[in-house]
Every structure is written in C-alpha cells, then in structure tokens.
Length: 214
Image (cartoon, rainbow, N blue to C red; front, top):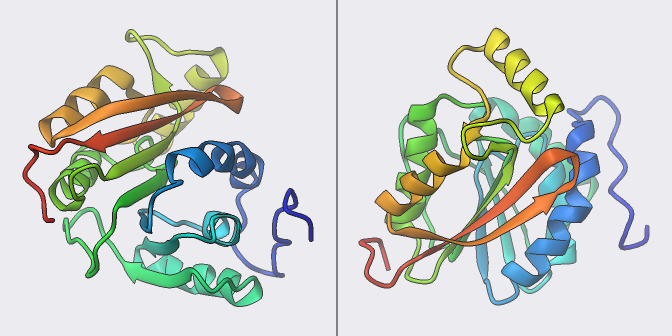
C-alpha cells in the first residue's frame, strides 16, 4: 500500500465514503499543523477510518481515538486490520457528560461532529478542549460551516435541510458562532483552510492565559 492509498475496509465493518474522500486533504494540513504535536485526542472517531489513516502517516505523535461505546467495536476492528504502533484503542468519550479521558494531550482533532451533534454538545466539546489543553494546545475541527450567516454552497444548503429533517437539533453551524464559542474557552483561531466539497478545517490555539489543565 502506498502512502497515498487509504486502508482497504475490512468486510462487514462501518464505512464512510466521505471520510475516504476527505482524509488525504486533511492530512496535508495536519502534517503542518501537528508537526510539533506529541499526543492527539480524536473526539468522535466514528468508523475509525481517520485514525488508521492518519496515525501511520504522522508517526511522530500518538493518535488516541475516542467515541461513544457503541462505536468502539468498529473502531477496534479497523485498528486490528490496519495496526500502527502509535495508534491507540478507543476511549469512552460522551460529550453529553463532558468527561475528559485520562491522559495529557497537546492537540484535539474532530471531524464532522459539530453539524451532527446538538449545540449544547458542541459547547461541551469546546469547554473540554479549552479546559484541558495546555497553553499552545491545538484544536483542529473539520466540517462544513456557514459564513456571514449564509451557506457557502447550494449543496451545503441541501445538506443542512437533510440534517435538520433527520434531527432538528443538528445542522451546519455558523463560523462566527464557533469562533465566539472558542474565544469563551481561551481558544483563538490560528488557521482557516478551505477544503474540498465546501468544507473547512479550522485550527484553534489555546492562549497562554487561558485556564486549563497543564
């Protein structure tokens, strides 16, 4: 398997086509953003595809997966099929309870979570990152966002309608609301990368004066 190829999905395991398509562009940003990181906590690992793709391609850091308990079997199966020495088995992390897993992390990565979970859980995600990352810690957030109160594409407008029909508490969030929420928890926008399919990769940095766990 070459560096550009994604791990082949094991039979009968959860699979996300969007994850398959976005992981190479995300990696291109993370190589730079996480160049000096040592321990990354992935919040909402989902199928587990991102972990098995990113970990071997970022060998200088430890990639810690996490999610709800019901997703752990799929994540573990992906990891069993595509092991990496710096990839860790999933920890239990439920944003509804706001519990930070044991361990020290200097970065958090989360993909396609803010438009899926309810807004109070988005608030909890930022509270956890802002409260536990050390000074200079990074939060990298991938997904679609609105800018200036409007959708960035008609496809995002249609996607938002589908999300809200499925769950009225979900939906594409406004970038300005996300940035304001980050600021409440001592996180400042450091990078805003345009990504394929009308997505963005936002990188926030925790300030030295923020109150967190060092």
